[in-house]
Image 1 (cartoon, rainbow, N blue to C red):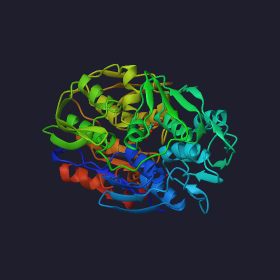
Image 2 (cartoon, rainbow, N blue to C red):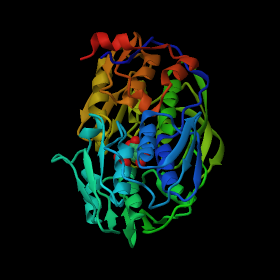
Image 3 (tube, rainbow, N blue to C red):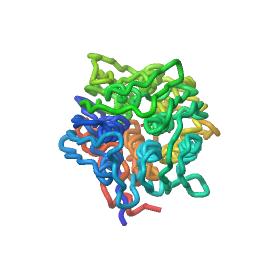
Length: 447
Ligand code: S3P
């Protein structure tokens, strides 16, 4: 089967205004909480990407009536906390780690059996980080011997709340346990070792089910009901990241990104790029429902390598593929440590990015928990062929790298870009990236 890819001509710039699609994390949660709420939820700005559509399909399969999406609008007829029905087969969430881990918690409290399956990449990712604490709550979930999906979730008589200190800073684990906690006796509390995205807590509050926060610990009382409320999804800062980096590294760039989510638990990419010398203005701060948004203006800048502060790692966890391209185009060395989580994302993002950077003539050294990148400064990347290993964010990161390359950049396997950013190539082309999306390019060279 031909594999889609990109061929991106070197140089060019990014100018004008780019409206990036809705936030993936918030889109998943809108479907989940809307489905469990009493009443009807209207979602606007929903991400029509394969990942959030997989969540939508899973809830339809459990008896929830959902109309849309149409131009980002979704109408969810909530069935109430106890209204889901048994699915008619395994729930296939494709590439979506957030769907699998959050659903696992939610399904642990249901009176029916269910099975969660995913694609090859998701089936390699660790699931014991959710199944172990769920087992402590009394859940009965089978994984493979390697602790991976398929996940078979058996009904149990009762779940009970736990007080859990997460060993890794993970919003997916925190959210999974809070969703299971809705069905548990007593209180479920989760303590995070570092700040992680708080969209679940914000949306639960919007749905009249407040979570108590005390420092790094969040607690939720079992048995609470959710009341439907409208959800307006901001533009995804993780998708905006490719344009923030692209406009920083390209000569003559001046780009506006309107209504991007700037939740303080997500803005590591802004903090890190600004520390590297990026020219990013954050204007018109306002609220979009429970989430803060702003218009971002980014212009070309001379970037310098930095040591990335460890406290920024969870706040920028999905943006490192793009940030590594910024580092490759900076003057001097960028050092990232404390980021072993990048090895268990949609791909091993340390190894795959390092291989691609080396293919583009960049000096990149893999570390057990990070990477060291020596930037080309005033120079250019060479151009060449890189493989995304099916990772959406790696495909997009290398596409924008062409803005500072001497020769074309060929990206093999861009199909999964549809999981988070459908229409990326067209939007980037509209702003000035000379990108061609083609099946043939990758088919010639696919391994
Ligand atoms: C997400 C949390 C993060 C992030 C993922 C989305 C979420 O994962 O990488 O893309 O929506 O909660 P971890 O919880 O594994 O850090």
